[in-house]
Length: 180
Figure 1 (cartoon, rainbow, N blue to C red):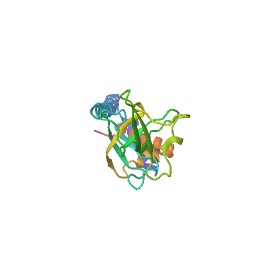
Figure 2: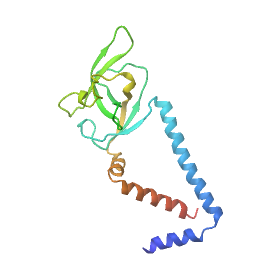
Figure 3: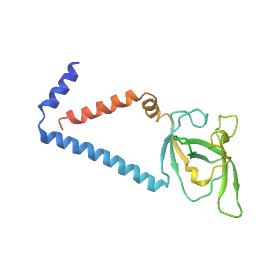
Figure 4: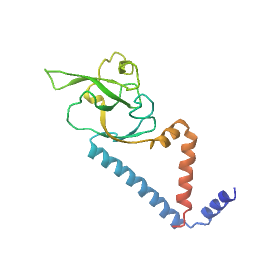
């Protein structure tokens, strides 16, 4: 409680110029993060170059909390590729392996069927109502690397939003109250 009181006292004792400087610094940090993210989007060709595995459907290859790095290029999707895809009606992308690809000879399109390595059946039950196959536009990217367990902070903050707001508030107080 004394530490909170001392933080509040230091905020009250600040002059306007250092507070404005701290706010500008925070804005620059946020802008730099956005620029970095957009740079990754351009370099990887994926609208979401980094995703967190949210379930155990891809075990033992990927576990819940692993961070996947994605890349998307013009190469055709092949059987065995691990892809991240969006389905209409679902907000969260899904990470699964391609088990079948049907290439159409009349067009350059292909039909793609996926399955989680740890799931008993294919993903048709996850697709939009009446959808039996994915198309290329559903694919966000292919997994090209991963970082084990690095996404657990994201999972915890999603499952317990109070922790997210506490962390953001604490970081904001630290930025505003810092002397430098």
